[in-house]
Length: 214
Image (cartoon, rainbow, N blue to C red; front, top):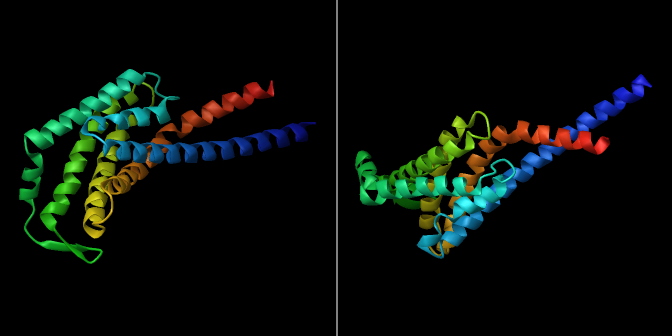
């Protein structure tokens, strides 16, 4: 009898582990898809730029209950980064830091200043957005300070990919180029997102398994 209970417990733990892994993978894939979709929508109009906050929340709604605050904080972050980059010309300051020269990506020469300006401008943009999102994330999830550097790194990857694709594949539609950039950002941030939420997902599945067994 005890052996049977032990075997059932081991089997349940194994199944729970598999479910947790699958749920984490699903979260990462949905996060990537949500960011790609929002990027393609943003290409339709400047006024759709903050739509990323809505698509992100649709993925996170199980963990962040307040839709309005997530969208508001994300939009504020985007607006402040826009002011810094466009009105204060931060991109020009960044470009001036790097020496003149050329580098090749896919056999296509690209000016060093332009490449790093693209990378660092996106890094700045998503650092500010990530900071504002952190104010909301920390209310529901532990250790979310890691979200800020993850968002910054994702933004840098996004900037590098966007410029590289634009230079190498000139005939590509801008929406598709933006989708590549969004994939880079989402791939980086999805890793940290899964690490932040894996215990929450595990506990949720554990509670559901317990109640289903009653």
